[in-house]
Image (cartoon, rainbow, N blue to C red; front, side, top):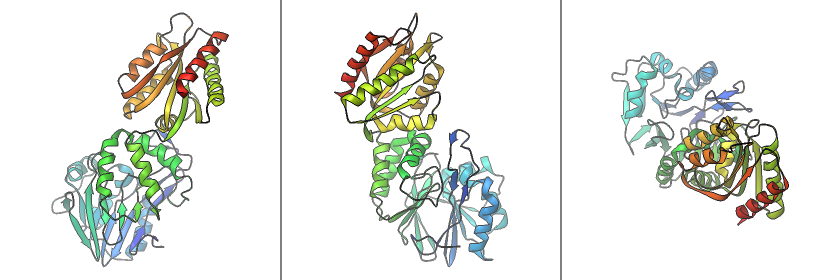
Length: 388
């Protein structure tokens, strides 16, 4: 069992779940998912979180290799979500003298998940409390709603690493390179944590006061070296600021006509600007990736046909996802289609008006069934508005 390079006395005992198809039952993970768990071994022994039950056997094997017949002194529970806590009862029963260290909120929630006698077993900690594990001094930082209410993160003052719970996580392996960190970390952030930007900002402000030289999340690779980029991305994302000055065209189409208009707009924009343009058919693309792009770009175009006096269901679902994730601070343009009573633009506008700081471009392109020369003219006018 090799120690992590970021610090002495810290072992990784997590696992890659390459057989998982949907994380949380809804997010496609083509590269699987990692569940990270750590052990500090320095005279005293502290386990930081467990992992998902899908990988319990592998986790126990790695834990036993580190323990080498010894007993842990502490199990630090940073996050109670089942993919990180499935083995709490196993530890409690196998090591009855092991203390469970967690926030007060976490202690109150543990009985919801496990039938454990917590009397004299739980040590609750508050903001700024510390715990000595051998020569390592652990400082606890509360991070409620990043992204559950009981969450805390742990700063190792000795090793100068932050055990970051679900913050700074990503879909995919823990042992992969960091060249593509942004893509899957962004998709992970906006779909898992994205609603709670204010709370992430609060955590970033606390973290800024610490000398952090490494970040050890519960999902994805360990972040070491120059952390500026990762922290900057989280700062941008949690402020709901556009990361890319460009255009995301999200469309759905019943018979191909709305799709044709969306593609025509993309072609027109490409001739008018060098800014990046992304286009997605909501019916065929990954919804989580579409949410990611909606937050990534400064401008979004929503193109949909009228359906049952409303808007095509996949667009309605997309808007519901955006609202649930606290979408805000963007310019939005609308293209609608309708053969006798166009209503898509009206329904889309109603949903957007429930979101914060959304600027809806006045120019709405309304297609009557098929794309005609006047439709192209309207699309060019809309493109002019978008590139202003």
